[in-house]
Length: 308
Image 1 (cartoon, one colour):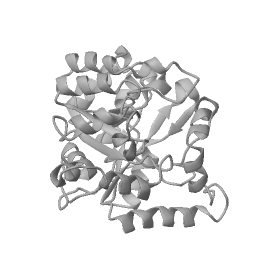
Image 2 (tube, helix red, strand yellow; image 1 turned 60 degrees about the horizontal axis):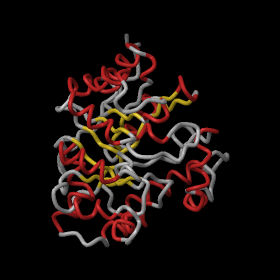
Image 3 (spheres, rainbow, N blue to C red; image 1 turned 60 degrees about the vertical axis):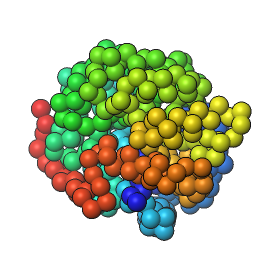
């Protein structure tokens, strides 16, 4: 069966985490995982190549076929950008394992639309990533609607943050799942991945996904073992995720927030039927990206020429 890590951040200076004041609380919440990942700091001269080699080797050892990485553009609100070109270059350099998601700043209006289209048509990226809480927008904000329409036109999925964030710089209510329900009423054809899985409003997200067949739920940045831990709040994801939503659960470690090996070990230890597990660990994501284990196109990189 195909295995896909739906969320990961390569340990390079250009793609790695960008510590910033608005995300400082993440450093506290995920301190143990981050400390393990940063034993060899990628920002130190001479270490980045070793860190990257170890990162790639981990995926080799675990038999992970594909890894999804994301651009990040929150320039207007927080002055941070991981460029689409940078993601495309990494995917090209390490093809065919890596799948890139574009990101644009919705506050830039028509320029964002043009940049997104360029990323899909000319850089070979495979979808859109919108960390809405970092844009200081709810997922149903009208600034995002032109991007949703463009996703449908280009026939690519959009990844949106649904659920609380640990950033104390913005209200956590930006992540309410009910806002996604409104989006799906307006854009029923839109293929959406809601990640992280909407804690503490998990039942609300399950309801949204039950209502709308193009909504997927990504179990990112969480310990899979909590799906069967009484009182954790995550238990409904196991119940519904192995029944009515079994074809729409997608899994990603969000490394370095979770160790890749531990994440997939815990995932494969869950009480899931073989066919359901195959979907969770990669089959559902493969279907979303229109690929299978023998037919995955390598992105064609075109970085020359301005897009207008």
